[in-house]
Length: 197
Image (cartoon, rainbow, N blue to C red; front, side, top):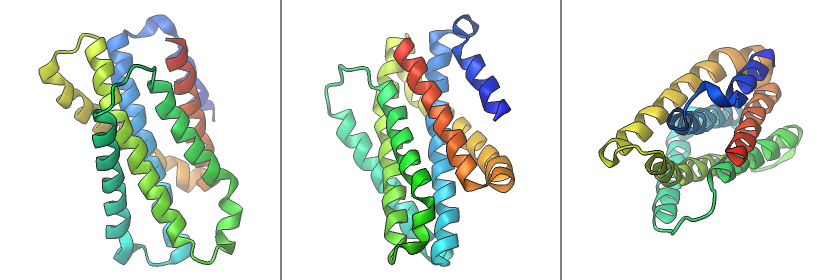
């Protein structure tokens, strides 16, 4: 928890980074949140359903379907509102719902459908972010030709860090409830920081 408090303090230090760097950091945190939630969903699926490996294709397909659907829909909307805080708020809602219902999962008869829904939700939130991040990068004077590469590489950096943090530190040492709490707090910091900027 101390580690995440230090990260929060660095993020809130207004003069320590430019708007352009913060735009990329937004994308990285979205990628980190996405991979962490998918990883936790996969672990819980294996725990409660015991059949992850032959159903991994279904979970991955649902994530990719959500990613595609949300990107297409949001990309065709006229975005005028400040949507960056909304993306992190959506992450907070999904994480919080899973966090408060962890104890109930064992009592649900067809629990695998809950995990399918969560994987789809993770894809939808991740995909919602891409057009929003593209507009944010344009606003912060990124060249149009570099926007796709900036989003893709920043998202992959976040996913790489999320895989390491979630797979090597959070889940093994702190368990799933504290892992969810840590990701929830990280997204709360980004809601507040994006509202303030």
